[in-house]
Length: 382
Image 1 (tube, rainbow, N blue to C red):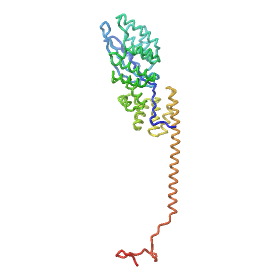
Image 2 (spheres, helix red, strand yellow):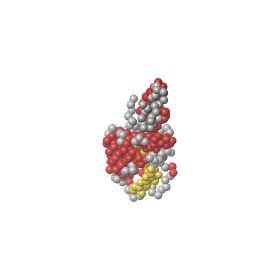
Image 3 (cartoon, rainbow, N blue to C red):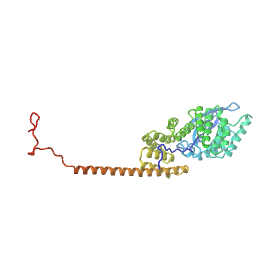
Image 4 (cartoon, helix red, strand yellow):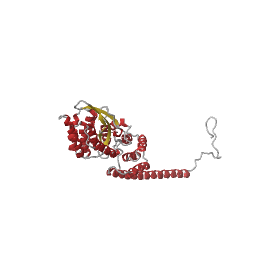
């Protein structure tokens, strides 16, 4: 079995979308309660952003938002995953009693989506918000951030038409982050429909709206790496080495650049934090095999990956094939080594035999058995 040296393991289904929960909601000047902190897992990192908007009455409302990164199919494997049980608790907290506060309703919708609520449940909350907004001004609509949440909910549940209905208007948003979020989500939809060039264009457009928008950077980097474009992948992912999930992908980048030792160092670093992170174990197994020809270490990584529950079934299938390919290559390498050693032994034996059978070299002697003497003039005796 021959597998190309450029083999990559990339969890292509882990397509990143923005999570934009509204937290610390309240009127301007109110102190947020500690319990309303964003539900991130203890290992997740998040970058904060604050937004202030004016309602129709001229009062100011503020809400602190944090960006998380979520995958379409398996968010538990990403570096900025949401704890669904905590999200469910917050959804219940914000949604109980059907608050009359816009920010609280927005937080209920965001938390509900993170907790896996159905589109219908989220739409009910959005309707309550729309009714509340229209009591203030008949021309008011639900906030863009909630429209984004509804679009992402449709994306996560596979209702792509519903998702595009909410996302399309947001592509023209004056808010750069909302605009980047919507365009990025459209890129994810393009991938799910097999339109890869369009997806790449979308991710680049999202970065034009906000050049530091991490979900688009990650999507572009992972997609480029999957296509073998190491330069683009490195450019997109290289600035996020504080993110262990990105570092897991950089294992493949470094291996393809011939930097297997550096990749091995990253493997040890990432796996010290996430020892059972399946994609990392598989990528590190490939690096140990193809980059370092360390068959034992490669098989240790891959067998450990197989012992980890979860992920897609195809991951285990690919890992099994990788182990088979390693066994085949290792057996072939052992045969070649044994053949080479045998040839070297034979060559040494033949050399020793030839030496022992060769007659001793004799110097010419005169009749008396002595070397002929040479006169001072350089002539021999007559």
